[in-house]
Length: 124
Image (cartoon, rainbow, N blue to C red):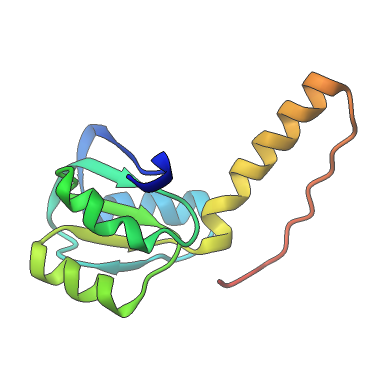
């Protein structure tokens, strides 16, 4: 996809959308927004953190059964319902905070600098 940001793969064990969402909620500490059949079993998932709702059509074109990202807009609601591909919006901040921590850890290890992550309870 654009900027080569979209990831796609297979779940080790197929899950229902509801089960996958529960795992995401537990990991991120927030309840995601789900559009689609929560009892649908999925095995092929696509994801991109943050404000990547615009990659949803690409995920569908690549055969994803579920797409996980941070934000949702009205268009994704309709696209999910029309295509049968589930959409999970888990929060822009919540889906991006682990990547920046990993980058900080890598910089600290590579260059010996002190890194401190400041988290903020951001509902977006």
